[in-house]
Length: 255
Image: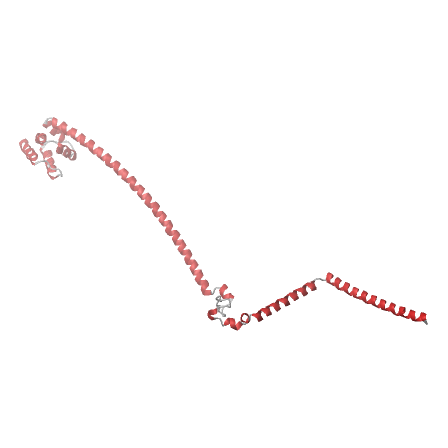
């Protein structure tokens, strides 16, 4: 009987140990399976973390709204005077009837106006370029005209100088002829002067002294002397009256 009572507790302890070992082994296997799933598919865990963060954010916003009721109440924000927000800044006034397309796309009238303004701008630019071109052409023409005027002035000065020299030379020649005729005998001088052209004869006679011209005129052919007298009377440069009277007396004597 003593041996039987000592054997029974040993038989009951072994099953308990076996059961405990089995339970521990099962738990260990369950933990290993969970870890393997997390390693093989990490996306669900990331989604879970994101969802947890979103939940935390919504909870923070709700708590902030609860702490500041004025900020979260739209009616109180709309009740601010002069269209100001809670921070005191002016809120932009937007017409609800307008849409984004109204700001982006101009109307047909606006397009026509813009097109008309563009064409008018082109016309004005072309007109401005034309005026500038005409101004440059006028300036070039003025420069050419001024240069031509300067050239004409130089030519005029040279011509006047030449005329002056020619007149001076002609005057010297006439003076020499007058001196020569005055030194000749009256009959010889009258014969030569009577054959000269009237214009040349007038120039010579007008430069001769009255005392020298009277006997020459008396010795000239009566018709030639008469024509010369008429030219001297009607001419611009008239001789002295004494010279004419002496000459007319000589003509009467010659007749």
